[in-house]
Amino acid sequence: MMHPTRYLSIVRASAWYDLLVTWPFATPWTFVWLYGQLALLAQTLGLPGTLHPLDATHILLANLLGSVVVVWSLARILSPTIQLGRLDGVARALFALWQIYAFWSGASAVVLGFTLFEVAFAVLQFWPVAHTAKTAERA
Image (cartoon, rainbow, N blue to C red; front, side, top):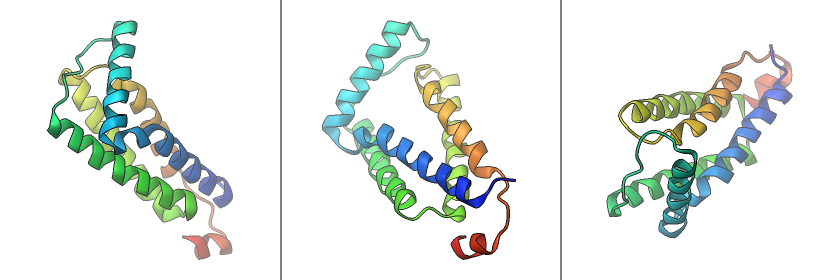
């Protein structure tokens, strides 16, 4: 069992990770730059899979994802709760599932670097939390 204070620290840490990694997805200009850097990294490391050329639809979907994740991150940084941590764990499990599916479908292995963090934070946020009087207030 994890102490509630420790659990909320993990929720906040996962939110900071998301904010740092995802903010470049929130605008067309930063996303195009990031995508180029990821392509360069994949090429330099000789990773399997492909990063296809971007079009307006790819950029739009990335910007929608980035915008939502930035706001979701801020919610967890400013007001972390056990409930938000559990919901984030579900989202991370889904993200990991779709990232693995994308890799198996031919996407660049660079995506698997993100998958490691998704799985790690999902496991931590599904961890049982000790029940205390304060836990009931914050949940």
